[in-house]
Length: 303
Image 1 (cartoon, rainbow, N blue to C red):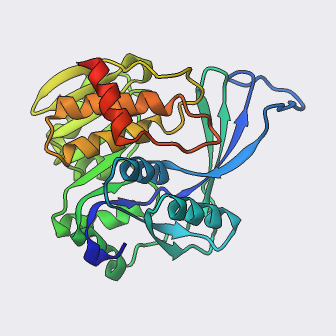
Image 2: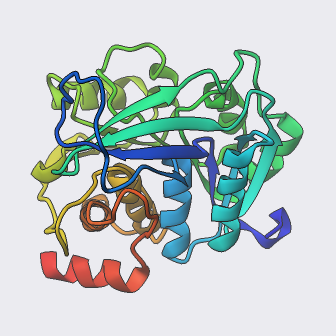
Image 3: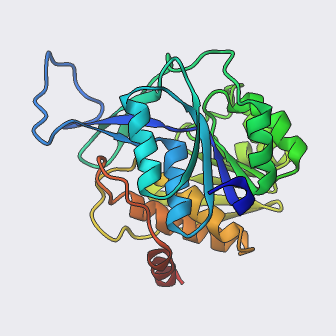
């Protein structure tokens, strides 16, 4: 797909590779060694990849822009996008493709270890590449990986609506603040929040966001829109929970899919809950986003 074909969502950043390590429990007690009988696997798929996959599975025209290394990990990311017919603009990253190690417990919880050496402080998205893509898109989803923060002024200048996912922000780390204040739609997790409502209202009052969504795992989600806070109940997973990795990205993708069809925010959040629950049933070494038919069927069960 070229810019001339149109873009529903430009996903910025968040391309990389995860190594999945199943562990007997979390936190993992210290030991000299562990035998991992179920296998240790490496696959493409970090936050931007999962959002792009989720959107594409729901029929949207997606373009993903990020920096990738000329390495085996970068090849995995390129293959993932090619296999799912997702347009990818991969700018050269001499430091290599982003990597992480995910320790996954029997209950699906995870601990992620990110390799921050795969970036340089002076990395940037060239304006001559970013501006045409953002201007051609109906929406831009900005991940919080470097160097996306430096791209925010240009993105705001295009006038294209923005969303972002702050993940496990504690409400105080200054790194996340530019994303929180620039986006029209903000996702985050309640994991590190002492008072989710206060943080959500703080984002809405200080920034541009008309809608803020805080996901709370098995407890559902909190939706703040136009000053009103609503609890969104969790969706029932369609199969046993195996891994929570990518659940927040699936939630965001399904929410955006409905949002771009002008569905009301509460309905968008219900779609997100269904997609997030589905993602929790996918083994950590696979990428399998919910499709439109499955999303509609799951949403019908919550009505």
